[in-house]
Length: 267
Image (cartoon, rainbow, N blue to C red; front, top):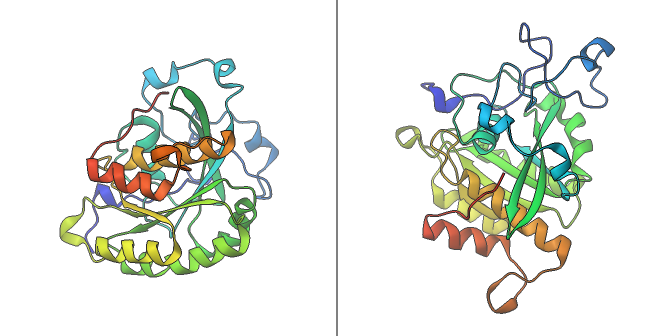
């Protein structure tokens, strides 16, 4: 299969793989040396990646100190575009080139505004390789939301979503928010997984679904904002649905996708 920028790998490099890189934030139990732990990580945790200067000059830490923190984990096979999706959401830009495969797990924080309420998403990017599953399983247990990605140009990554969903059922909390994302929707000529297949699988497992593109930004903000809105409503007990009904992330995603728009995101 041909490879282009939209096929970028989706995960963090290990601290030792990028010369001069500070490496991602160290995760417990990964055998990180004391020397590596004392290095200053990049602002996002991505080796060799710096966000635009205007983003680094955002709100001071104290402004977000009281914002509720919601642990959100990106899951899926290696290469489906998890890191590219996160960088697109974090900066509004597509980071061209390839990310090397993660060793373990890393995270970054993103504060968004939902109805004038600041919600902090602590977004964890996981290694998709089988040998790291025992590490990532430990992070499922206290997750508030899980975004499961597959690559619409890779049938195996779609087929493997059933195994991922099985692991979620085994290791995650029963009330965790789950969203299925068919990524790389911009690769029309290389598509092998139909949108209808993703919709059918989402109905089977009763989870929200949409297709995304980390390259064009299609539905990227919508995916994270839908999760943030659901988590905010759960925390406050608000009923933000039509006629005062409880907010439903699946209905919200369908309505917003049909409108072709996304609510504003404040950072």
